[in-house]
Amino acid sequence: MVIDCGETGLGHRSAGQVSLEVVAACDTPVGLEGQGPVEPLVERLAMTAAQRPVVFIHGLWLHSSSWGPWLEAFREAGYAPIAPGWPREGETVELARQQADDVAGLGIDDVTNHYAAVIEELPDAPILVGHSFGGLIAEKLLGQGKGAAAVAIDPAQIKGVLPLPLAQLRAGLPALGNPANRNKAISLTSKEFRYGFGNAITQEESDALYEKWTIPSPAKPLFQAAAANFSMHSEAAVDTKNSTRGPLLLISGLEDHTVPDVVTRSTLKQYRTSTAVTELRQFEGRGHSLTIDSGWSEVAGAVLGWLGEHGL
Image (cartoon, rainbow, N blue to C red; front, side, top):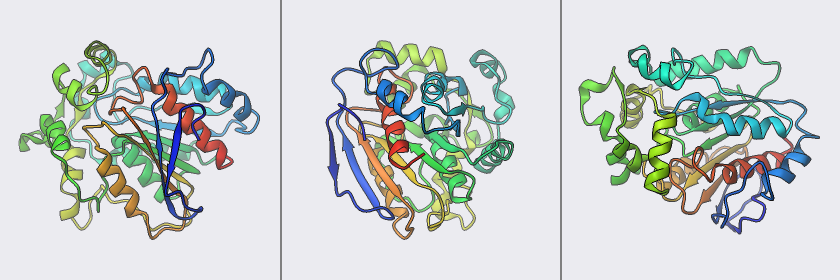
């Protein structure tokens, strides 16, 4: 459900089967203040959320603090949200930039185990919300039974996903272009960020987001995902057959270069043998920056609405 955003359902199926829904972009970005759809959702959900924990997991090249507006939205909706950084990540954007080598060599399992340890300290099974590689990690944790539900936004490809669009190859070149980068920490240039994240927004906004949120990130997860289908024990593997897990929502930006929509649709297909709820919602006109750009609250509103639909 995305209130007042002109949504259109495609092939919606009953619970326990995969479903897909296209969400048209709102004419006006919604927000926490004013007349946007997040505000009435906050009022309704605050009565039912009962301080359920929510763990936000960022992906490559963005700092954990980039989830700040989402934390506020979920807190006002009655949840108890947190956004821990990756292992050894600097507490601020500036520190993370100064300490780039600290995260070099981190792999998917290192990050997954780090968040699993965070979850162990929580009073209840959390809702997991991840973006990009954070989405892949949220899927892994949900498959392991460590979350009540998960939302994977533009999630990195898991093992079994076959499409490899040219746009995705180009977006991954800063790391994958040199095999020697595997155990290094890599930074994006503003031009690379513009292509991989900011292609659906203005140059001015892309540059501002680049300056505000980007940090160096380990290249290893990209290499692991790229080779996943050639490895018997890939760290990019997810238990997609688990039918006892909580609901999963996949979100795709239709203009995304880093994780093109065809990749997310292929991810959806990997869950076809599970009877657990798995849904896909596609946002028109949105790129990989959809969690941090001026339209972030449209996506947050959709997530809050979906959680409400499933009694979460």
